[in-house]
Length: 157
Image 1 (cartoon, helix red, strand yellow):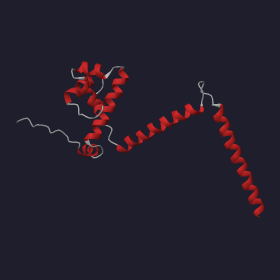
Image 2: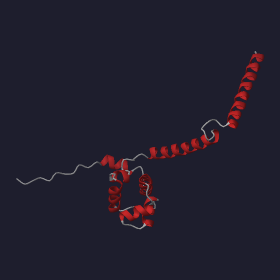
Image 3: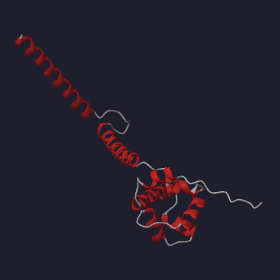
Image 4: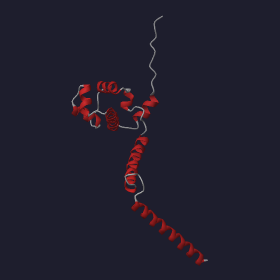
């Protein structure tokens, strides 16, 4: 009796889902964004990261900017350096472009909200008096308009 080789189970549905959402250039951008986030969280510069993993800073920069694909060996080195699984860097679980696009929209809205907060509040995070006056004037105008519409409707009947 010979030993039978056990076949590796293929995950074709997961592969299909993964492959049909982001193309290669989009994946490079996602990986680059993750590398940038990990680097910033570590408090290091691109040059320092490049030095640690034994590559030129311009090469690392291309990986982080998503213009070049990092080879497997570099992904492994970065994984060890940052103390994260390669899956985290490669973003293999990020298979929904809708979520990716939605996150971009959420980021834009958060930036807009931050800008609005700066416009309507002062340094102590209290409502800017000029903004408060503007809101009061708008409220008064809407109230007056509501009264005029009520009066118009009452006269019409």
